[in-house]
Length: 222
Length: 222
DNA sequence: CGGGTTCTTGACTATCTTCAACGAAAGTGG
DNA sequence: CCACTTTCGTTGAAGATAGTCAAGAACCCG
Image 1 (tube, rainbow over the protein chains, first blue to last red):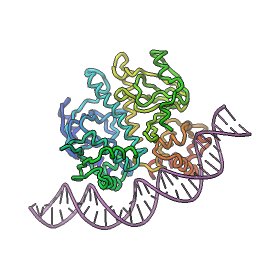
Image 2 (cartoon, helix red, strand yellow):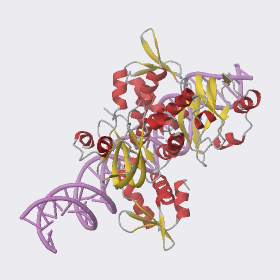
Image 3 (cartoon, each protein chain N blue to C red):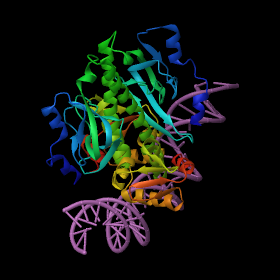
């Protein structure tokens, strides 16, 4: 099922459009559901997310999927290895993207500052992935969910009337594939946190953090 | 137990010695058990492994540990994020290391080729970590062990009399902490592979690959 | 050779997955 | 705009995988 995505025609792949119509575009827009690139594609552009949310995934032959990361504003996605993309990348929430030529990575000139910015972003990504390792390798289901919510609330949450809340545009399956859990376990963990009055769930995609301290405690296994 | 490592005196930390005695050393040697750096240390040097094996780890407050990677010849370790190390790094097998100043990352000059080499190494690390994600998040115990052995045999195995074999200097606990398994599960998986005649275990730290195809099949969940 | 660590094995348990059913939400077409 | 269909989320029951606890064996080091 997932595997077929790769071969399905993608409505106007944004990266193609970029390359063809605008040799050095400022910003570009990508619609929900469209793909920026697939695993194995040669890397021509990196993208800085200006608004919206991206999803970076990797597939196993049998359909198992790992969500590598969610791309939020400020993130830069599309770092090459041996010149190729090593994840798929699609758009979860309509996004504004700033493309950078891959060649900026290869050479300091003509823009050493941009080069350095992309390099620092790559280094930051390494560091961020290591937190993710800890989560995937060592934590229980409830710890994973609590970690996820804590990190997301700090990163992209907003305070409305003094209450910390969080939009989660991704599905429960996405969260599961990000944390190495099944949809059912994600759902049960949410329910558990809700029943203990640590979070509240407004709309399915909106989480309200009622007790951040306890949530953070749970994320560390207390 | 693990946590105390951080505060114990380390016999002559190599990185200190480097900084103090030799402003731009060629190669340096690090003894088994010594630490190159700890999480939170400012990054002054990166190290290219020339021989030996390093271990990069991260700790949780309660002592749970994630082995982030094993550093084999050709690997470059010590990439900073915000100028700091974000793992501990110690020596599993006496190592020869080539230190590079961190400043090589910050500037293209005076050595743009070295700068580019370190950058490419960082990008390669991102890609490698994504395989690790797949393994941690989606694979069963036997798949993890089979993946680990397959990758290691390809990367650092040697063929002796037409037989592929593999030195594993790390403990079963290290392997477990790398794969997100307990020592016992690692041990049982090895035993299972041995009983099915897919591997043979010579000395505890030497694995002989008897049936690479089946091993690789298991690594993908067949 | 002896003491300590590491590895293996067994029995039991817990956690998470699987399978299944149902309800809610969202998308589609008349 | 409403019925229909499909997807997504929740919940329950049962089962499997991996973890825990415990003991003994193998290995390593002085």
